[in-house]
Image (tube, rainbow, N blue to C red; front, top):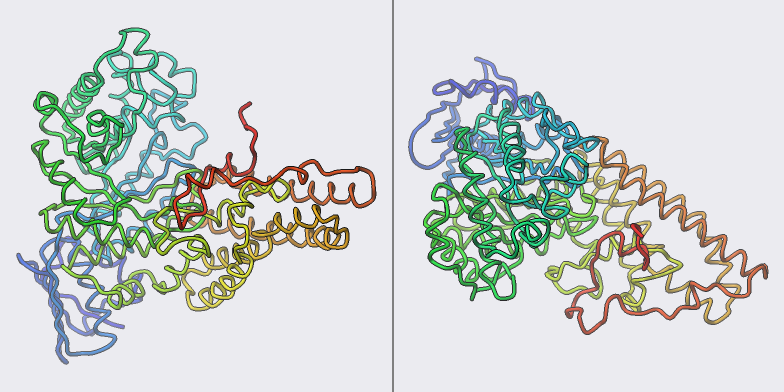
Length: 627
């Protein structure tokens, strides 16, 4: 397709060249003419048989409008579409601290898709994955970004009018950064900095300078969430017990002063103030009381970020947004695309919480929102598996109402992906036994993949559920999805193989235990003979996962996932060895199979419609890795 863009294109040229290349458009004076005009008001695209038009206000609106124009033009040469931006800023925060550090190419790929969606803010969440020259162990062997890498990303984002905001931690969530000896004098606990210590603030100032240097933006996210043991470690030894509101405010004042010294405008996660005001320490306690003198003594030039990816009630979000406004400034809202559920995204919960939250934000006049894409417990889910969630944020950002039909069309255009196929990834965890939308965040695909079939810690949780059959059917669906999604073949090849593995492994431990209890040597021999095939399938899964990882993620961090796969392969070989010993009479009993299977954890603590969730180290053994 040849297009001739004319009019107000100054400042758009570099981004336009990139997107035209992405969409296979040739810019030519002999092409179809499109008049580009920058003006206040809504975003509008139109076309008549002889010419088209794109009318936009902000730079990012042009790139969304360009995508809309091309999308409509493929269906008709006579159209007009207008959209009203709902938010001043709308974007994403990608976790690059839980092993998976996205490459520059990966970030730029994401930015191109964001440009077409019309998302204009991106943060890379870096606990210790950026370079601080004064502290060489900060981010050592963790895939930390160089200044040059981050600057290249910021330049690229700027082509589209996307603001890259540094996103760091200046109080807690610093376990990996503080594990080295250099940090012994600046930590309160293993993951929290020592408030009031001069060396601590020298350290924080270096973080602020280093994190902000590569970026144009003067805004910076300084974290400060989930400091649950604040003032209860070395601080307690040095100062005795102090009011934790006072400790928090003291620290915030000092960090904000350092930020302002370097002309930076900080934002923080808001939860610690609500937790400290709650009798139960619950962030979302509607009865939490934050004293007026605490609010009055807080720095005034700090934006509060209200993060919530749990509630499905629009009214709750509205109430909590109103509580945030009591701090004296407009809050930023951070929702979630559930890429941290396990080894597949939880789209049921993503959609239910996002629709409620963003409807509330519109009604409460909130102008800044973003979606978080966390990578808890190893970043087993590739961030691009969550792109459908970003499309949902984008469509909420340009309309009061969002239809599934429009979402599917926009997603196909912006990413080349099939909406229904991406949402089908939800079925890895929304299995038999799990309630609609998986609101309790079960992740059977994770615990069934990693659990030891000889120990079967989760076997009782899934007893009598047809999970082998479920995953066999899902494997067939993923195969068809792979055929439909040419741009995402690596992603769907991986998920196809995951479903195949789980179609064998999900109930393997249950069958193993039952055959052993019945002294059914024929069945145990049959199960033993399946183990070499299962090992081959797991190893193929490992290789597909590795290929998917290395396309857009740095090599650092893959070793964690590799070791997990190695654990399965090694343990499956041991299962074969143990069965062989018992079948040939070398041993009289298999002690692991003698043990009664218990529910993990007590069934009365498990919500109805849930099967459970846990971290890797609790899934694979009842022992401890660190003992």
